[in-house]
Length: 367
Image (tube, rainbow, N blue to C red; front, side, top):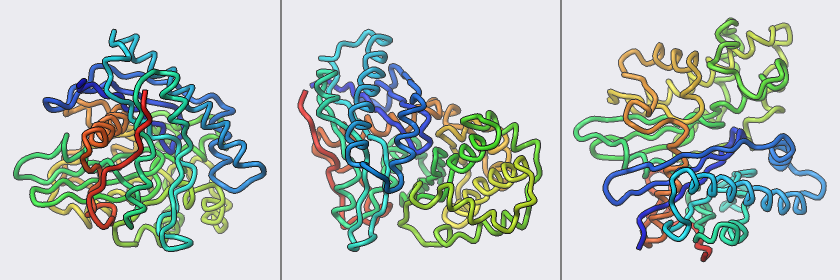
């Protein structure tokens, strides 16, 4: 049986799709990486689907078809780059696009919803597809997120020392890899508010290198207001998403700060993202000696400086320092999770998600 797996990830930032071709038979070997951006209409559709709206079932179904076609395109691009045949790939781990994440709500079970069309992806690529990773963990009483700490343990754990791994995508999530335990949870907003404010005020999809934020000044009163959000003070296990941190949430926070310039709001939002992560690392990983950062936030130089300033006792670097570029980590995680599923092995960590026990995650769609 082939040991090659493809992971395909489109995250909360809604910037596009990353795919990697990986082999986990002897450590972690990444043979290729490919990326394709979302076009503006698809991105807007996913943003709209984060809230109730007219004809949303129809729009979600068509968005799933469009996403599967984009996934197939990035897979074909990856195979072409690496010279690997589709028949040599064991499976694709396809995360899908999260549009609702409400575990333990409503009926006490709650749900998570990733728009996807794995059957279409299997048809288009002639490769077995593993999808719907999160819902089994929720069925077992868990949060369904984060799922990456198990992979972080596999990849980044070090003997005899505690390593913290911080993924800053749309949402920030932390993995604490201690010698005797692994824990993890969602901290709060990552790039989601920064990107939203950029789009609204300078017409850019993101603040490149944090340069705009770095030119402004953090407002301490607004920062304190943002940090008072109840989710940030809940004990793990916990997870979040655009269901909480969205445009209306930000508008409410800004009600008493109407006189602030747009650039100072951006500076404060960046400080907020950093401080939320700093606070959680200090609370939950006080013995950590190293912080590895992945996700798009690792390329925000201003944000990385704020993390280092807030955690002077830690060596802060991107995962590039240990051989895996930040934009490849989550895609690699879902390649690894696909392998776990195909081998009938658990993919969740109950100590992280709060599930009743280890579970084999996802459903398999034959080639």
